[in-house]
Image (cartoon, one colour):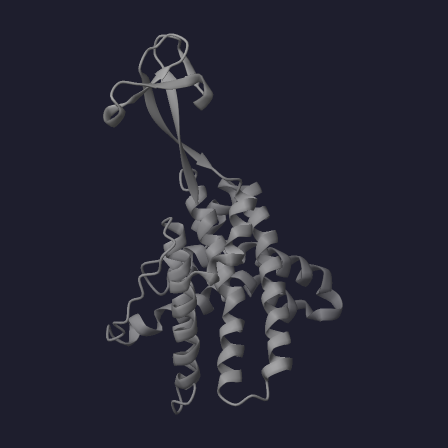
Length: 269
């Protein structure tokens, strides 16, 4: 997410030298870079260069094309599809696998990693297995509880403006809530909204930029899924797998973008 460059500094001249302002001195196998002006040895300095946040968020669109990510995404789509056929709890198992995968992408991206260390050990108990789904649902509940309360208390006819305003605040809160939910230690951590609100206020402009990219990713993913469903919806087995895989592209890109936000602004957070 960040790149590094090496600059050459001349201690005698007290300036950085460009490549055309240097020359090599000494034996061919042990030549060193020296200043072309004074002949003094140049000191190498590695500098961290951070790309603009918008560029990093845009690069998230190609993240699913990484071989390891594409493979894990296809496996998640396939396994979650089979889990849906488990009697009674198939839908829950399928949903929690997908959400757990999304949270894994978010955490890996927040740590600055491009790879995914897929944990195949799911025998940690029911609470561990269902934890991502519970945190996901509670985050939505906290985000949209005010809008729901206004709707129930005042009705749509009388409270429409307040319902819309509260729902808009819920949309604003939701990405921060997802970040906290993905990193939370307990299933009930999303019920405490203060960390998510603090995250928004610490980096308001980057957060709003990320929110705009999230909306773009959501729309793009939905459009791709619709196109694939129209073209391959009647193809048995393979069509369903492709539709589920494409359906995961939007959430994976969005999780990547949230992780990028956390990684690029880790010092402020």
